[in-house]
Amino acid sequence: MATVYVISMVLSSLDATIVNVTLASLGRAFGVAANEVEAVTVWYLVSLAVIMPASGWLADRFGPRNVFLVALAIYTATNFMAGFAQMLDQLVFCRIVQGFGGGLLVPVGMGLLYRTFPPAERIAVGRVLMFATILGPAIGPVLGGAILEFASWPWTFFVKVPIAGGALLFGIRYLEDERNEAVPGRFDWIGFVLGGAGLGAVMFTVLRGPDIGWTNPALLFCGIVGLIALGTFVWHELRITAPMVDLRLLTNRLFACTIRVSFFANAGFMGLLFVVPLFLQDVRHASPLHTGLATMPEALGVVISTQVVARLYPRLGPSKLMGGSMLLVTVAIAIFAFIKADTPLWLVGGVMFVIGVGMAGLFLPNQAASMATISREKLSGASMVSSVQRQIASALGVAALSTVLSVIGVDRVTAAGPDLKAWKIAFICAAVMTLVASFMGWRVPDEDAAETMQRGA
Image 1: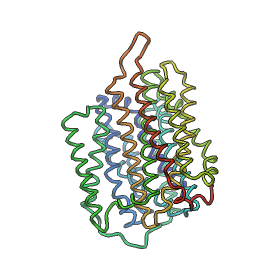
Image 2: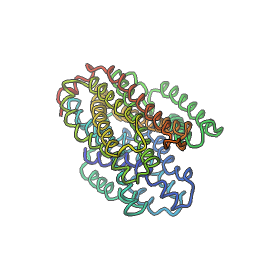
Image 3: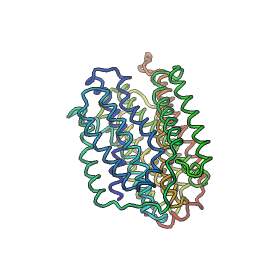
Image 4: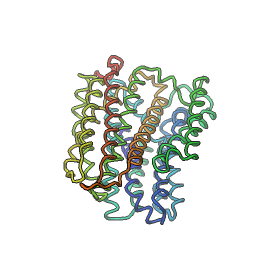
């Protein structure tokens, strides 16, 4: 079970980073401007956000195994079709449908994992989720850069087909259906429309704002409509007895605390993963492959420190591990504020390694503790809430740092060389986000997660 989920989530999470590396090549292949080709990424993330609110109800109604396998089949098929796209519109369509599959894979798969492991073994779940969450974005730039170096852009999609297809066949053979005994109520169409439209509009606004300007009238209208839809969605969901998204889960103290920590940590971390490759390619003029290799040590830091974090979890608890780890990440990111145009790549790799060590100390305890006090029948809904906040946090983090670069400007040159002011402020902003996560990490109630601390590995 864990193997199928890890493969699926790694593939889903590396999608954005591997495609980002290929955007320039896609623009040349289709003969379109850079701002047009960004639709390949933007619409994938928007469709991801639209379908996620329905994932909990679908899993409860049709069984998480069935929904997971259908989502994986959609993801596999659309990757295959995307590689044959002859026009940008065809590729964007494939990515939209792919987003529907990816938007179900993560929350439904997460719910399956939490059903499989009892609370005392949730540290094992945390390890699985951490690998999937962190390794995907780290591997993406390296894999994308290598493909562009030795092949062509369609292979950034084709390379995932045999892996996803193998996971699909393995899942059909071995996954067991873990349904709730209680049958969910009728599908909340009002909630689906409000939540999907609201999240989609807000995600589109956040993703496009740095590029076309936050004062663009059409974009402002889209953002305002999205916020109104989300506000109405919250009001509607709290009024009905069988909501699509059980927002009352956020009254659970431990769950709410881990969600807040995860939100700011993901915003800072994903924002950093967006800015560092840009800096290396725009300022250092590094190739996509060398850029990926420079950021890859972050994944090595995660792998090397995982076992240590798992052993420390029962002794220290989630609060000390998350608070201390995010403080380490904050210091490491702050080092980038002193970066220079000629900073050696090995030093960049060393800092990324330290960040990986710190992120392991955040994600592993966070995932282990987050569902500790959530009842079995609420796991699908809680997994969906966790997945949605992660997507929103990632988008906001990238948008915030991208806006800093856009407003201050990255093209200015001084007598001493490129003006790095915008880059340094962007790194400071990322450090502030992770510092907030550190403060919130110290406030997580260890006593609520006591059951997950009974066994460490």
